[in-house]
Figure 1 (tube, rainbow, N blue to C red):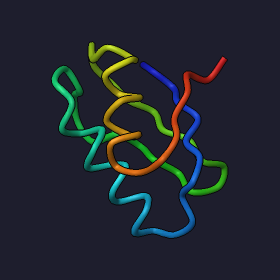
Figure 2: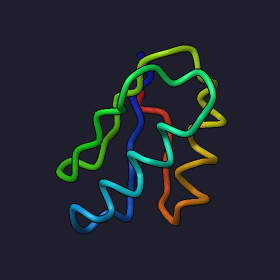
Figure 3: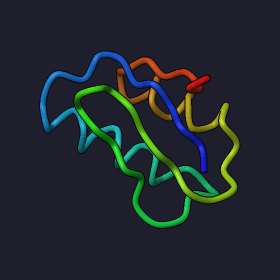
Figure 4: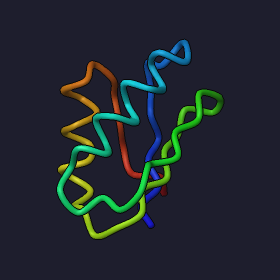
Length: 67
């Protein structure tokens, strides 16, 4: 499981956009669990973290690996 910090989300539309962006990444299994507060995402599967971060950035938000 990969856990990401997500910045820039302000509403449920943002959550949906991030969820869809993450779900489209190759290797993601099931639907990512994205929460508005705190801004985070849990992703199952074997997707590469850099690809997940790129997908979130392309959707208009910031992402980083949770330490």
